[in-house]
Image (tube, rainbow, N blue to C red; front, side, top):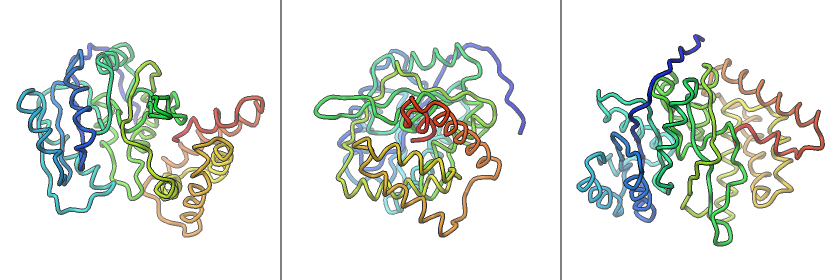
Length: 311
């Protein structure tokens, strides 16, 4: 695979794409956050992914008042799943048209940001020509107060606010449609395979507004994440070590067993993987390096070394 050519040039414009499905409860806070940015996007395409609540009306109202916001509606009768979300994002990308821009960001519809978030993020790209994908630290409400999410890692960027250099985004083909999700993880690993840097900046705060959900939903969600890990080619021993590290760390430990069960279910069935052998080799090499680092330095918390891969 050819390495990218890194050019030092001023970063001027960024665009955003949001896929929104029945986000009436949260999307207005997202709209307010972007409108209040000290450096606003050149365009923001919001794709209503089959919404049947008041999402469209809210977005239309803000679009009427702010010219950079554009609402795109998709068929409300189609099935809503991971593939649907990726299709919505791709539809948004196509809507951007030929207008030049330097960065493209994926922004979920249940996110709030500080006013200087994108201005600061744009500057990070201007300062580092090798930076391909970046984002901030996810905060979630715990006991009435927003706290950093335990799974935040310096080289793993949450899909909720991934910001790509345009050349990087186009070189990896955007986000792939995957059965069990993980499209953001796949794009990030693909970018690193090509020589781009992926950095999660702790000073950039991202507030996730949606509640975590019930325990039963969490177990189902974690089982699906285990299937996702297998589909990406995650190493079996790394997966076992990661789950072991989480068992003793509530609330993450609640779904740890379910996640391992999902992985082993797919492993026993030998399900086909949607990624290349090169991708799997790259990912496993990275995971095994982290696993050996944990073994060589047993005084460090196991989770700190193990979970620096995708959470």
